[in-house]
Amino acid sequence: MASFGKYTHAIVRGIPAGMGLKDGEKDGEDSEGCGVDAAKLHRQLGVYTGILRQKLGLQVIELPATEQPGLPLSLCVEDIVVVQGDTALLTRPANPDRRKE
Image: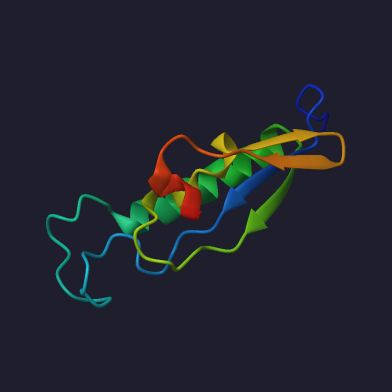
């Protein structure tokens, strides 16, 4: 497998255990109306990481999920990090809610 262009690694974040639950709701309760199908999200992440590894030949670094409430976009790690060589630069997101990530 050839690497994807000049890239050799990809960074993804795990899915929080509470993803897909409304505030105060416990796993197994009715989550109607929350707008997120957690099982589908897990399947999609598996497909995504599989493509990165198998089709593109990238080494995938999986960051642990953040369980801190109120960070729904914490899954999107690719838009706040710039990597050059062996140096990673964490940017300061314009949206104040993203800065907690």
